[in-house]
Length: 157
Image 1 (tube, rainbow, N blue to C red):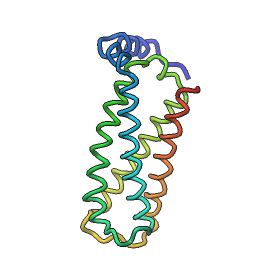
Image 2 (cartoon, helix red, strand yellow; image 1 turned 180 degrees about the horizontal axis):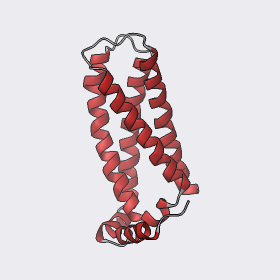
Image 3 (cartoon, rainbow, N blue to C red; image 1 turned 30 degrees about the vertical axis):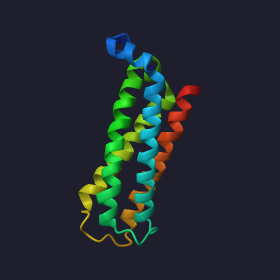
Image 4 (cartoon, rainbow, N blue to C red; image 1 turned 135 degrees about the vertical axis):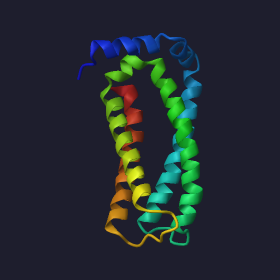
């Protein structure tokens, strides 16, 4: 899929801006931040989703939300900021990279899935063995695993 010329001009501007130049200078450190942030994020999300699927029953859903999701949100901020800077360093290449595009699609699915969960359920409400909750957890696990896999494939596509 081609990128429209107007969009490519914006991407070139971003890539060759001071932000893009600085991001290229600090690229290894940005990657480290991105990977460490993802490690914490995926760990929190996986434990929370597994709790929704019925594992770790001694950990209440409310406690899971209180502790795990707070840490997940903080790590997501690190991942998002480092990811935006990594994108700025190679905007024109990444815009046409199929693995990157699929990663963004999976990210949109994962975030929409989280919004739906928080919209439908409050942490104080005791979540029982609902099919809907299990579906949310499975979609979340698959989406985040796919995001990590696509992230690794970006360098090879």
